[in-house]
Image 1 (cartoon, rainbow, N blue to C red):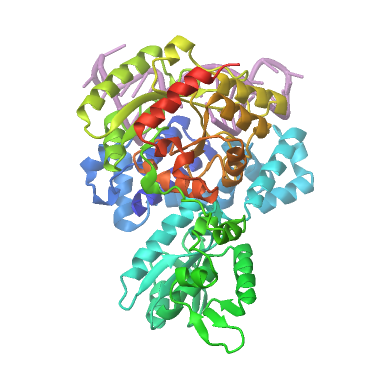
Image 2: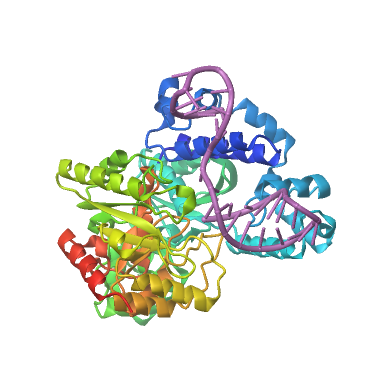
Length: 578
DNA sequence: GCCGTTTTCGGCCCGACTGTTTTCAGTCG
């Protein structure tokens, strides 16, 4: 993940928003948006490219290339700074609320001088929106609901955003002299879907050099607190990061303590008490004498309590301790177990990279197989046709012959229509190796309709995987309201797998839903839904989510050898229907 | 602003839904 690509993408997206808010040329805004997306998804660090290299990125022309150079040289883009000065940052934040776009955000600012979410709430409570043209009672309700949804995230950020920062901090601190170990702990290590703040641990004899370096990092914007054992900072992006430096001898105890979860740690400490021991972040001690038993490694602490080492993703007090005592902890799925990705896109629809680049990147990851699943025609904006799909299949077959060691599957991501129908009739679907089917619209149907709709998709013999089953967007949109137990039962009955979509905004199904689905005997596909080469790396979040739901290699169809996967796909086609 | 030419301009993903309006603008995927 390259820092400058992301920063520049964010900046260009901001400019696109500002153009939209100020009523500028909509096509120009769109051009900046497209460039932002292309740069965010570009596999090469733009800081290493010259003007010519920059313009080779799709949707980046002379003007935007110049602005990127300007940013790389001066750290800002004058034009964007200028527009920023005329529109308060809060106005743009309003656009993050569902139901509010640039036009309504601008109306709120110009007519009511609202320039923050809090200000908007106040205006609503004072009933000042009532007189505003284009704002009615329903809009008001939608806005309130949207704000509630945003605030429920409670300032927590996406797993991926936290991971990027943590990876960077760990890399920076690991280079310092005297660093025995350095890693992240907390909910990030447990791979929770959202993260409150980031905990970084260092094992070293002397803490001062680390605390000093931490405060001096280029992305440290503010030092919240600093001492010998703990320093807290806020990054330039507003994230809180805590650093704790432990003596190497306390590493295991500290790591165990700061990884949590709180509920898990309470259980473990209760066990310690029953063993007449006492567990703290400094180690495991004899309760009476206070003599240290062990503290250096997590494994030793768990072992002394009669437990195997418990993977962090399981430490949620969901039965992991009882299972550990019975020696029945699952052999969790790991990223190494994944043999292929079954849901990916190319630039034939809304992906960024051409087929050849996606395939080359997949081969680089060491996959044994890889499915290309571009959108089907019912998602009208993607302009798919039978001819385009068949032509792509020819290219896939040809590439497959060239690639030794990785088999290419030709698939599609079908759209599940309002009645549960999909884009193509059986005879056309039969030509695909694998079909993913997903809901992309009509989220507000009744519970019965949504349930029937999903079940009908499962019953289509050619549908092998239900993509992002709840369609939630974390912090933005709740999942659809269907009777998912009925859907899971249908999946089990028809041999249809459920997706664990690894996109950090989706993580869909989430851990709790996977646990429920598994009880119905369903199999899963852990996919990235990649729309660019860097997106392929989202597999780590899909696997993390799968781990949190106790999934093993046997539960996950794309962890199987190709032969077993093909058998699953074949049997699904035979046993679905009615 | 980008792109691809019918090569220096003219088109740019397109349709549905929703709420507000009184015939359509704004938002979304």
